[in-house]
Length: 351
Image (cartoon, rainbow, N blue to C red; front, side):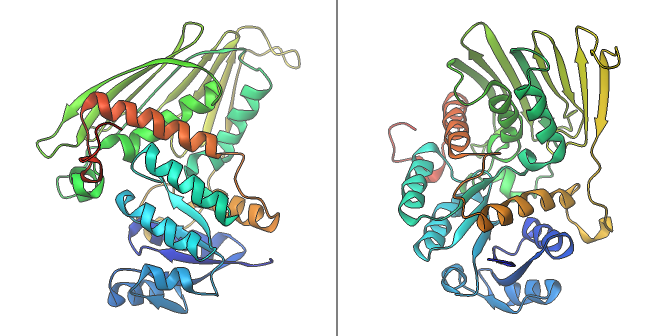
């Protein structure tokens, strides 16, 4: 496989940014797109120079000219679209969260194992150079054993942002933005670390989605993490990882990281310093071409998927199946405590 052929499933704003970056910054090509209406997919195709467009997600998945499908729709639709892609032996990159809950995630895992296809939940932050640098610091023991992680993320979403406020669309802050903070926690402590308890509180809207939340995760060994998120207010998205030998600070915006500061208790043996900051600039492009800040950072995730496919790999080390399942488990417990239940879950006794 030389030039990877992508199909874009869902023709909304995030898919537009993803496609713009793929065309501008990567050695791959978009060969097809699909939306629920032909007019919408045709307009998307014309905007991005895509040869084939469909009014059916299944038709895109059946297209022999597509190697890998990017799923950029709302999360309640993900599981059926993933199933369609895997049924047609397409590799999958699906926007986070991959599914609504852990039960669905485990179902997808079984299907992926049967299909022998590459699969990745698109927690794109894990692929940024700044995040890779943080992982290297953690792996080499730069701050010793991690004792505490804290972060927050928040945006003042307007009332007309339906994906946030509509429960039938998988709305609420946890699955949309809170997941960014949680993925830093699980990255810093590691997926094998034993969680003793999770304590969460928040505010439900009249429509039954979480407007904000506060989460404390207690780990074995008197270690813990806190994550706050809000759909009502802009918050300073700084991430602090505190260890026995120092602190790693990821400067705002944490989900599109570009600057990391390392503070050590003991001077560095090379230059005697105790504090150092490293910046990682994003690819530059005309900002007017994008719907969201920092979207050029999609380059890192796309390039990683392309490389994994060329190497015939089936999952990414940056964000593995263990990462996905753990995050889904944590979010299920948080939603249970806050009281968020999606229509697809209402017939279930418990998560």
